[in-house]
Length: 337
Image (cartoon, rainbow, N blue to C red):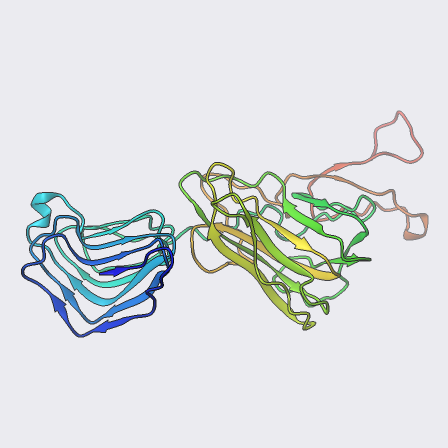
């Protein structure tokens, strides 16, 4: 029994090389909140009562998780009773469970618990899709005069957007944008119309940032309670650091993820995935369900500047698009060639 009330803590206990069998009636391992009850480990053990009234392992609470490391679970009578051996309630995440599992299954939200990977033919765990949900994560098509980036919404004052002149890109064909701030007022960079997923209640996102100003940028989102939470900020080291977070969100509103910027910073390769797991910057996969690209095959409509006489009068078509709005100079009714 690992039970923490609202004012107590039951954390980081270790149990190993033992077992549970025989006259267990309700539950073998019970871990529950509402207090902090996490990082409790069971290693190299077996939990094998023929049946339990609740489950062999029951986990509940937003501050509760357990680690079953190389644990064997069996319940010879649980299949006839149609009960899972392990129940992880939806308010618990970050559980790590592996080993051998026999007779029935685990009942859990695997998108919030990708570390559940038992060897069994009764169920299978899940790894959240690594597809980057941010459109134009490569920051193509930056309009310096309009201070805008396709696929992104910028809000704030006293800032300037530009492309970094460095040739040392972090990822192939991923631009680096330079944001210059004249004061410490908040400037927000957020995705425009991010896709929703109603099966998920957990997300992971972040961005590579380079700055000499401490806390110049942090990741922020709406937590499941409706409050806004934020990641740790950039250290101001002058080096590239990945600034991001992974947390639950309210399904009614979505995560509403954005980047809060208060100082000058260079940015590249933002990423957003649903589910709990490590971030995957630089990955923008196409899917058989459809895809929207900001690169060469995007079918973007691009405005093309008029050619300069000193350049020979030749039109230069940017590679970010393949549909171009071209106006002849001077204006004429003749077709543009």
